[in-house]
Amino acid sequence: MITLMRSGTPGTVPLFESSVPEPVDMLAEVIRNAFRDGFPDSYKSVFMRNNPDISERLAARYGVPEESILCTTGATTAVSMIYTGLLSPGDRILVETPGFDIFANMARDVGVEADFFRRQAPGFGISVEGVLDALQPDTRMVVLTNLHNPSGAYVSDETLAELARALEARGVLLLLDEVYRDYLGTAGPGLDPRQHENVLRISSLTKIFGLSTLRCGWIIAGRHLLRRLRDYSERADFNVSRLSHCVAAEVLARADKFDAWRNEMMATARPIAATALSEMAEQGLIQTGVPLLGCTCFPQLVGVEDTRSLSQWLSAKHGVVVVPGECFGAPGYLRIGYGLPPERLTEGLGRLSRGLAEYRANGQKRHSA
Image (cartoon, rainbow, N blue to C red):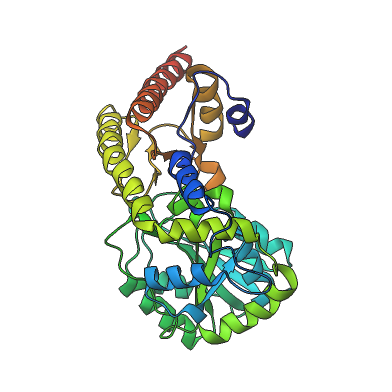
């Protein structure tokens, strides 16, 4: 499916994306204005340190001290640094399922074993006791996403704080991937690293603004953990792109405009997606459960378990690309990205609905034959 999307095949609609589209016109305007008279003041050294303008902007945005922030080359690098800098071969982590497979795969790459706890459908929330019951004696870290990837479910700060305190009492770290959290404007500031020394929060401009091209991510953590990560960063990620992070600083200086653009796009997209999903549910094609809070959803299909084959069939026959649940350890589900302009989204969801109905009808005919 990735090959298909990269090919630029005419007529294909990607309900595959996991963020809003890249705002190229807004980015171009930021760059033009910032570099009109040469390099801006935000073009500062990032050798073995953050761009200080980014630290200042992020601290204000999330209500945390500047010294609790470590900038990275994207959120994926942040995960790799955390695993390598804070864990040792033979340690175990506990990862949510359904979930993004990169968390377990990257752990295994550094000799760390991954166990799993289940986020139960249809709501995909978490139970603090359920997480604690799944811990092993050598579990050193719990990993979860908030908003949940793939379902978009939200876990409140109160629940996360309760979990963080319980894990701290057991000597276990809590890694929160928050790359979608900013899509929910009512989510609150998040856990304070000064109160939860065992918590690490990661995010990036890739998801919150669709700006993967800037490769700007960050870790928010308490003083003790961040000191260890800085020591590792100075060896492994000591020279992020000065130019990219300069532009990222300029973007964050105008974050209100990028937030407004994303929020407006999602405010238009969510009712379209909700209506289409409701109609598919009424036709008996899917089962819905989680409110649309982020930019992805994860409906269960009715009567279909092999969603990998279904996804391939949908792309070939109907020109709509979705992610099969098998990619998240949940056959029978589809992850649908709905952060698209209205015309494109309406067309894609229409193709998906027609494709699911045809797939079911053909399956019934083959079964009766």
